Length: 432
Image (tube, rainbow, N blue to C red):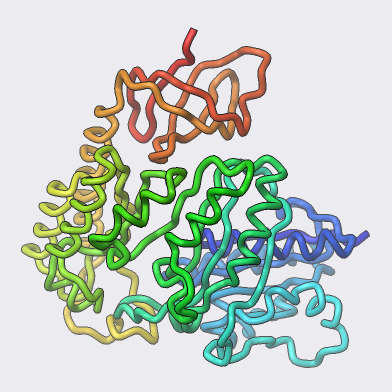
């Protein structure tokens, strides 16, 4: 039996696709092994969000032949799609597959000896329909990520992903329902809907939207929680109440992408909204979910960002009181408009602004946590070590408890009383 090992870089979409490729190989009789082990085949699912992602992808690829000089090494995914000729310079790399035909990875690997061209990368814009991949089982996880959509039509000035993923393509509703039903039958109680731009789900089909999809998924036996991945603010409108009212299993956790709290920076980013519009969407969410967790991403040091504009972002974070913020330093991506803009910000300034924003995020997170002290919440437990157990609430608050009892809490939803907070999680105790 041949052994195959996988390594995933980047987002939840990549992780889902890796799980789907694992399923392909398992069904064909291959043994899935840890990436650190000696394997016959290594598949690296690459990321290209930043230049650091590219570098890390190359480092991981080169590591494979050191683990086994005779192994077949495959690079797949976004970096392979964007820069196949860069990867071709790596002599130890045997096969390069972009974001088309990942669902045929076994066939590509098995046919490799008879194919002269190791570049299997095609124009992503020729792909007009969602390329179906499915996951029958999830390796060592409690939460089930379900990919429902691919591609992005936004073309933000800093982002390379539309060029790596192509235009929006929505997955067929029946295939989503079938996959969720299978995973729920295997005990997964929480599903997370993910994609490159899930707010656009169904737009090119004009037959179903994201909230209508969730309304159907919640009726699948075994599904207790439905969580949605990163959203664009445009999906939150005045009809939001009507939409969410038919999805009682929706988790009140909204990762609402921001990128900057300065309207002038948002215009340069081509984000298609301003700070005031974004804040109105936050108010709509909190009108219906007063304790909702609202998280976001913010880029500091975007080209031309002045001290005044950064301070606008800092003030906006204080105003919104996010439960968490993922802070990124702007990374120049060749092929994007922002890479050619004047006013590229010095790295030292980016570092300083990042540290200031992270410190403010910590204050905001603790303020949010404090609202829950003394409350009883349901926690889905996921992991444990030496008497400590960890899980998440519906708001995606990480909770730690002490428990040395005989019952295995893994994948169980249990009521917990929250008594204190730490830096990035809360501390609870079981009743009784």
